[in-house]
Amino acid sequence: MQLTFKTESNSQKITLEELYTFETFIGMTLPEDYRQHMITFNGGEIEEDNIEHKNYKEGGRGISYFYPIKYGFDTMEEVFEDLNEVIPEGYLVIGTTHNGGHILISLSKDTYGKTIVMYSDGELENLSDSFTQLLNDMI
Image 1 (spheres, rainbow, N blue to C red):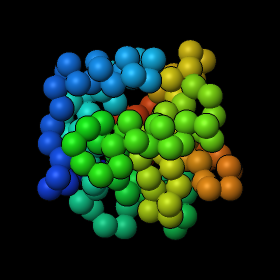
Image 2: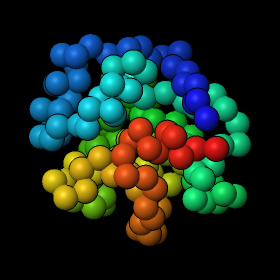
Image 3: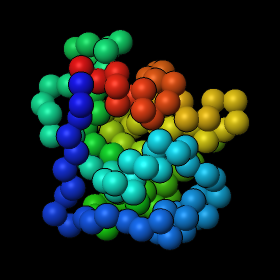
Image 4: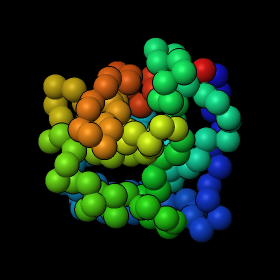
């Protein structure tokens, strides 16, 4: 399924310099497929209704939206500062699912690019092996 993203009215695209500044802020390099998404959309809300992860149908694990790096509500810097103490080491919160889970991407060497979902009770579930695969796994 080809997903369509819309940018919030209070957001805008970012530059490569702003992306590099964010990577410096978090002290990690983002996977290339995710970097390309951020340069193109700077996060974004999914326009399609009722999408779900192919491995978790009817479970609310479909993407709701991705946080913008800058320019908008719940920017990546704000979310990073709010949740950095509770997310697993080496992961970065990049968005939310329909059921309120946080979508995380791994920036650790062994699992680099892998996406998981984390719930408020700390439960973790695997989503996809890469950001591109996460997008492709939505039905």
